[in-house]
Length: 241
Image (cartoon, rainbow, N blue to C red; front, side, top):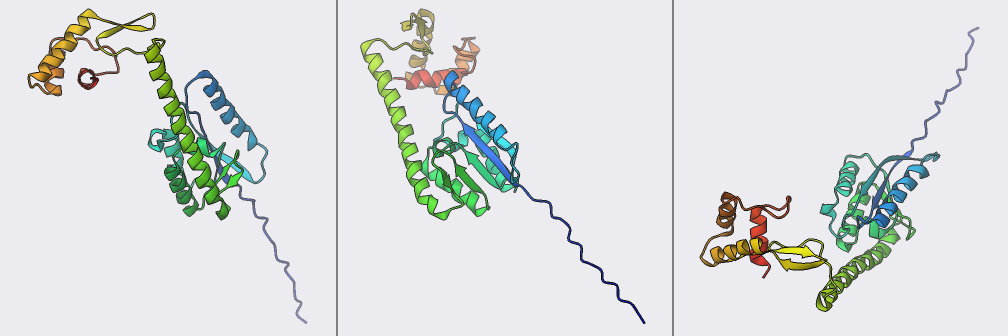
């Protein structure tokens, strides 16, 4: 009589797949205090995922001393978006909406694109998770406030500079061509002043900026700053007034 052998099914234990996370940090100034904040953020995210059983840190993207109102100025932010589009990231952690962006339009655009890619963002300060659809209105509100805050800070700084210039207490850091810094004040540099007069005379006589620049270069006229070309200097002088 034949015998029947019962073979028990074997179930292979599936290895838990961890959520691939990224952290984005940004400080809006290169001052010492802000750089300390920058280091604290990167150190925090490096440690927070060490013992996690469900999430793993793929990379930390960090921009130093960069404005949040212009995302095209943030190289690390752009690198993070590229990695998201390549399917390397599942979730992004960032300190706050103002760290992620201070431009409401860009903020919402990126949030929606990332959600369409299946990537969620968690804003820790506001406790907002884009995995919840109802949070988009809050992101709009908070993003708008962050943008207004950035605008207000910029306007306050401009007002402060104008006020110090008016009462004579403003200390210049970089003086324009034709001047020299002395005790925090600008004084006319006689040698450079003659070159400035020459530039204006050439311009009024019909010479274009490129031709004036070439003439200055041909005459061996030195530039004031290494990072500034003679053509840029010429343009600055002719447009300052």
